[in-house]
Image (cartoon, rainbow, N blue to C red; front, side, top):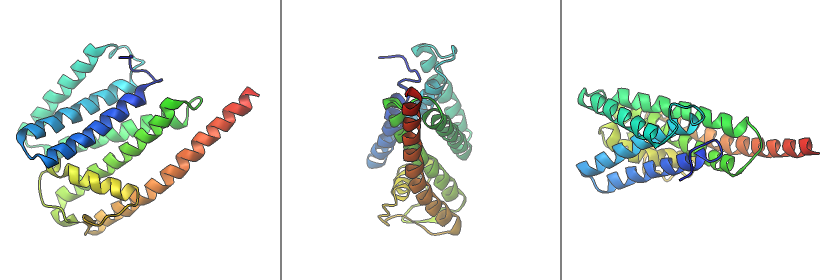
Length: 221
């Protein structure tokens, strides 16, 4: 396997994000303690890979040993929060991590160098991150006010993650199946804000990538 660098980091991170969403779907389809461990492990791996992919140029994570160490550290911290019952602190930390990862990804995709295949995949990666970030926000709202969504049972955040991740991506793409709907004003605000962000993202990213490509061609002339 090639070392993670700025030339291929989005390939690894996008695969990790897709695996996280798939693991959530599997855990929801087979409600069992083992599937809970599976989704926790996938989340931890995604977090660690995100750190590694954007800090690859530094020497504190130069090899697979650093990657394994990062996973072990996050696992221990995750277990401590779980035992202490600080589930929503755990959720807030994950939300903050995904926001920072999305920002770092946007900086690399939109504001640096020429356009290549890795940056095109990076644009897809940012779109997935937006959906996951909004899912985290919905989980926080549902935790504070359990009646925020119609079609959603009151449960712990990691039990509702598959459902609200599904609702998030349905809203982000303005698909709107309607089986889960926002019931309270804050939930509705987040839902239509996500729909606007999804539409603007496509327009802004396409314009930015095309503009960068034109700029490179003009410079080469």
